[in-house]
Length: 228
Length: 107
Image 1 (cartoon, chains in turn red, yellow):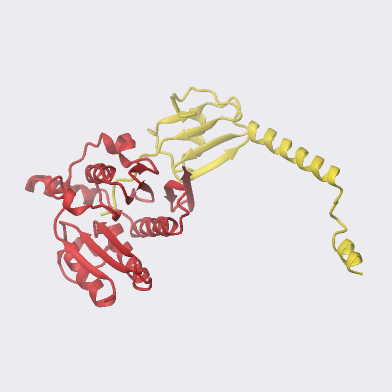
Image 2: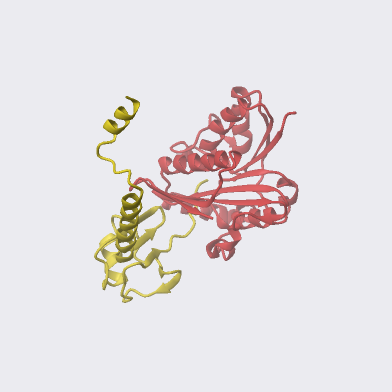
């Protein structure tokens, strides 16, 4: 009997955009029913081209799914052209989901982690980076219990000072764009974190998920997994 | 014949149970002593066991490893999970971690 895999990819920008294609390629060759939902309220703009994969301007979730559907017809893609917020989190993240969280703010990480905490079975793989280093945090719920610590256990996420982009005013959105220009990201770092997130998913599938955090530094070529 | 081949192929390996066990104990002891004299320094992905840090301050380690470990000047220093200041003096066997916050960006 075929297994059903329900995967949510939140954020289709620097990390999410690089993660989606290899994920879809992998899922195309497993003997399961695979449903991938891409969720993002942001739109591709010219300034994103140096790091992100898209053909047309438009909503990131919608544009990504348009390309992926053509390349990987076996996978069932959906898109949600909105940010994950308190208003839609319950309908977005459900029992049994595998969630790849590829956002650029701790407010959304906190929100999603709190939602996963309410579920009996879920796997949350969250990636984040600075310019040349970053980390992946894995929060696994099984039989209604934490198999690894939630993202909420990190003070910088629990006590975040940033805001969910779904709650931005127009002024704040403008400020966020300016901040992004002032603090650029490196394509290779996004790619590295995307790859690490997929590695974590594979380790989970193989029942070898014996760590809950992985750090990576591309300047020193060092990686360190924190064992549970 | 088979025995000849076996012995011939293992000329440099002592198979005597006592000496094997004794050798392993010595090796383990040496390794344990060496580990106790070293300080484990961690920052994010970077981790090393370093000699000759006995009696050195956290501040001096921060300064000397700043480039190699990409340690920001304001990273909180922890020894055995507790926050310490830059004048804290290190001893062998300790773990010094420069706290690395979760990466924020990615979109």
